[in-house]
Length: 200
Image 1 (cartoon, rainbow, N blue to C red):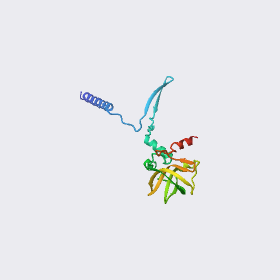
Image 2 (tube, rainbow, N blue to C red; image 1 turned 135 degrees about the vertical axis):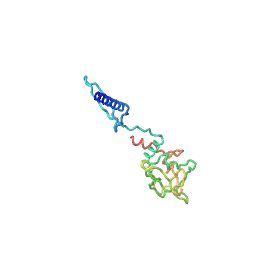
Image 3 (cartoon, helix red, strand yellow; image 1 turned 90 degrees about the horizontal axis):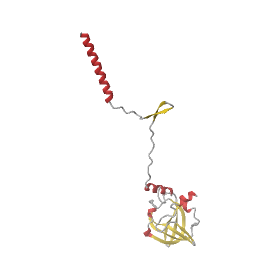
Image 4 (spheres, rainbow, N blue to C red; image 1 turned 30 degrees about the vertical axis):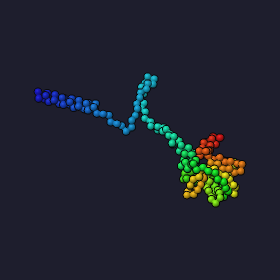
């Protein structure tokens, strides 16, 4: 009788342990895997085929703000755009017209990161004034050519540049020839011109 009782106690203990193990398995949350997968089943000619697909990660396109588009446009013009640091130096309140003799023509880079531009030294009375014309890539394709010892008339905004008087030109007249560079508000005529030129 003692043996029978011991046998029943052992069976009861084993059953209890088995029940506890099953309960623990059901309540334990699934462990996250290092790489999630998506499984699906498709039926092909009466047979079930299990397919496992790896999740794909694709970059989300970022919308370009107007400010970013403006900076990109200025880079396309070599920094000579109206909204750049240099372009904002043009002041419609300081526009004047001067005339004199050209004593030098050369290239220069107004600010770091800009493409090269053309400027000249104009002798007017007892003063020499630097005249900033515009980007070289634009002026090199214009018909009018300005050379030393020629007399010209320049209209533009007077500024102080590198501690010296200078004029950002909006128009240059040489005899009957006229070179327009900026409009009445100082907006460069080459804005958008380079894009059209590259499309031709």
